[in-house]
Image 1 (cartoon, rainbow, N blue to C red):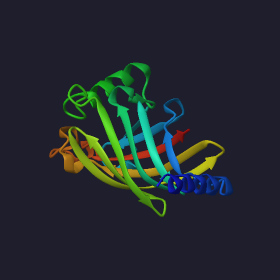
Image 2: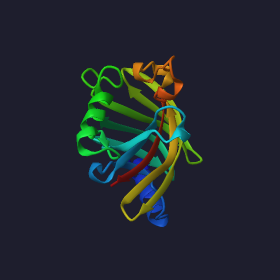
Image 3: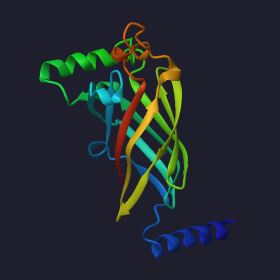
Length: 193
C-alpha cells in the first residue's frame, strides 16, 4: 500500500509541474486583498434610488481541481458593512439600519456564511447562510492563476433574498416605489494563496 501512495504522490507532483495552469489543491483566502461589493435599491432599479458599498471577509478556503471549485467556505461579518455612497454621518445610519432586526439582525446572526458546493463550466453553486436560513444561488466565476496566487472574480450577479422573509424587504403596500428590493447585486473579487 505504501508504494502505491508514493506513486500517486509522485504522479500528482509531476502533473502539477507539467501543467503550471493547474490550480489543484486547497487555497486560503487573503482577507486583506478580497472584497465583496454590494448594490441595493429602493423602488424600481432604474429609478436610481440606490446605495452601494463593500463587505470584508474574515476567513475563507477553497479546494480546486483544474479551474473548477470542488468546495469552498467563507465568512463575512456584518460589522464589516461599509457604505460608499453617503456622507460620513449618513453612512453610520444606513449601516445601523442594515444591521438591525428589521434587516440582517447582526446581534443574533453576526456573520454571513457562504458555502460553494461545487462549480461546473465556470458557474458555482452557492449556499448563503443568513439569518439562520439559507439561500441558493448560481454565480458565474472567472478563475485565474499567476504563480502561487489564485484569483476568482464574479461581476454583477444578483441574489434574491425574498424567500427568507427579511422584514425590511417586504413591499410597502402604500407606495411600491418606497419598497426596498430583496434582490441585491454583487461583485466578488477574491485572492487566494
